[in-house]
Image (cartoon, rainbow, N blue to C red; front, side, top):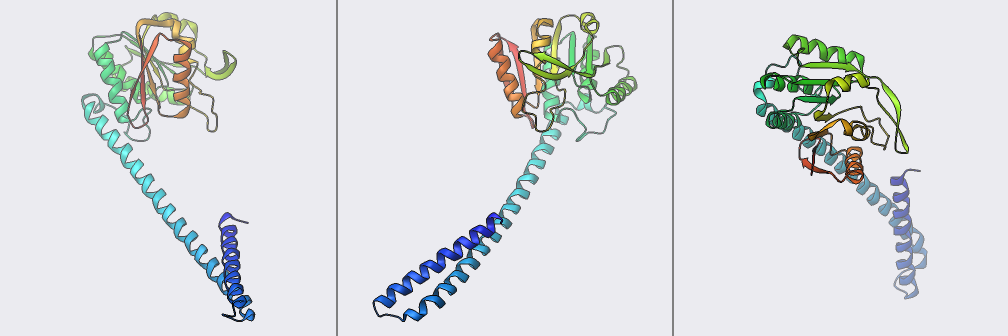
Length: 286
């Protein structure tokens, strides 16, 4: 029995009982005939059930309309965030070979924060977890700054190959390389994670990391354990003294938990949140 049916029956019973009680009280005072109790009870039950059913139907319609309105407002918010970000990084975005929109690893406004930080800090070495449009943007920042090195890690071989094709098209192969790193089970603390199997030789060659972009691996649906948590415990010793850690999707519950755990384990970091569409968190050393 559905919840709405249960409520309708309960309302009918309550209305019928109330009608019977009132009619019975009237009969006791000789204001009405006791024979009227059953007809009145039945009438009140029907009316009460109909009113409850109408209320449930109207409430359901309002809920559906409200849900649709929220979804459309969220779509509008995301679109405005993307457009605002594209305007801010227009000189770099206009060179991208990829179509803009849902395929972006970062939303437009998050990409704008990333580009701004990279242009201000001028990192010489960047490690990116999860390749995509951000790889092409950071590659252009390095090239415009006169050089540097970006290594992008990806577990999806097909997506990594696509990123390499775009890097070649844009002439960024001299500053950017994409490394295939399948996910392997790794134990961090007392938890086991599916995380990148990054060759030590790749990290050794890159040297101290000035900018670490955490945008992978993907968070599995229904998994409450933050999939990206190993990033700082594993790569922390390889970060330079003034390194910046850029966390995408920072408004998601798992990323909030991840950042909280990082700060609890190492008080040497401070977090700075930016209100982008999906949230961005920057971690700097105190």
